Length: 142
Image (tube, rainbow, N blue to C red):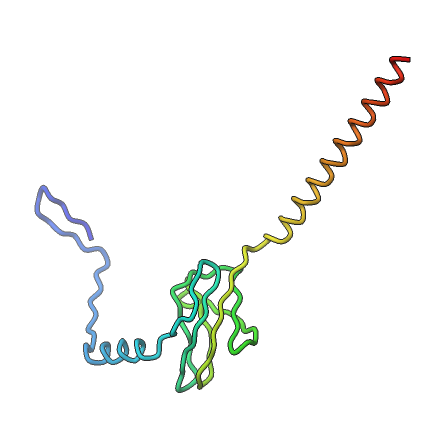
C-alpha cells in the first residue's frame, strides 16, 4: 500500500480481501488461551512448564527457532519442529505434560576447549622462550 500525501491518493498493490468468521476466530482464540502452557520457570536459556492436551496437537511457541534449543517432554528428549517457519514447536500426545526447553549456544563447548588449549599453548611457549633467552644470555656472559 502506498499513500501519496500530495495528491491524496492511495495505491494498493496486490490487495487481498478476506472474510473471517468472527465467532470461529473467537472460539479458536479462547481454546488456545485455555490450553496454553503454564510456566514454572522462564529465563534466557531455560523455559519450563506444563501443558494439557485433549488430543494429538502441536505446541506452538513464540521462541525463535535456533539449532541450540533442546526440548524434553516428561523428562524425555523430543525433536523440535519449526512452527510457521520461524518458531519452535513440539508434537504432543493427549495428556498433561511437563515441558522443558534448554538453549546452549551452538559451538560453545568446542570454542571454549580451543580457547583453553590456546591459552595453555601460549603459556608453555612463553615459558619456553623465557627459559631459552635466559640460557642464551648466560652463555654469552661467560
